[in-house]
Length: 129
Image (cartoon, rainbow, N blue to C red; front, side):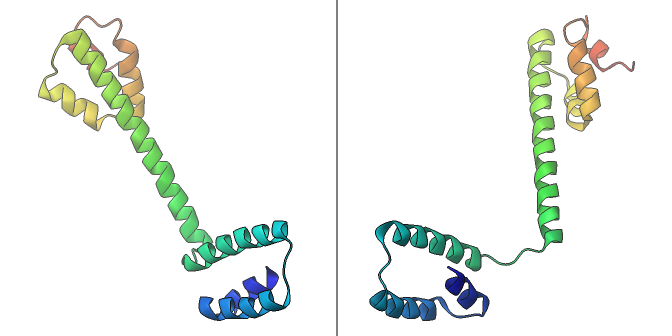
């Protein structure tokens, strides 16, 4: 595997590496267990080398983007659940209530969700504390 890795690191084409291994395979036969392990590692290495290099800064940016996406998904889920609860409790929602839900922060959504069970009117849910 070190040989394969170094060949790829030095810029050898896949075809050149395969031709070299045909020669090596002709001279030296690996035991079946080692052959399977080598094939698995070779496939993994080829997959890695086909992907463009990503710097640590880019990787951090990608991770941050993923986290932001997760948080947005959670918040959208909270909006949907609260919206369903409000519709079930008070009937169809007026446009102003829908707008408040869409523009709400997570803290507002949590506060409003706590008020659903006790509020007498829809307006009580969205009232300032």
